[in-house]
Picture 1 (cartoon, one colour):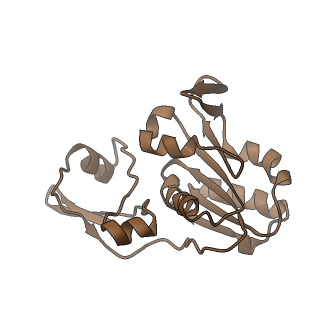
Picture 2 (cartoon, rainbow, N blue to C red; picture 1 turned 90 degrees about the vertical axis):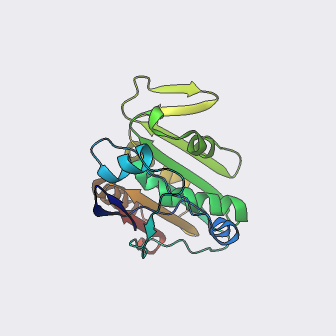
Length: 205
């Protein structure tokens, strides 16, 4: 939970930490992904007005989705919009530790321009143990390449039906973060596909 004073009023908003634990411990730097939306007072203020040296107040954690390291696991990370923040942290923690069998990372946004360059570098990574796929619902082209990064038109839910048959049913941890309707729909798809509810960790915003 972050808070600051805007127009002489204290404004609070819940944002997920995007840093990995070692960064917080070793550098005392905590990162957040804050998406600027014109009619959101807090996000507009932090991006357009705040300067180095201005003060935030960081309060207690408000979420319930917690990453717990486990050996020999496949990870399926599913996020939309600003739901990327906690999964961005989990993803980077997994990459640094190497403690995973495979990672499947699915992310949705409206437009390519809404994703910061630093996040794009993470989302475009794919190799034999990491598989990433990014979807945009408002871009014109169905499938296209930008600086070697392949994007896809549409929504995550449609692709899940093709992906899930290729994934294990055990030794898998699934993390979902996003709008309530998306989280509920994806959870229903996973449960109908035979995944144990104990493997599914989710957070709604």
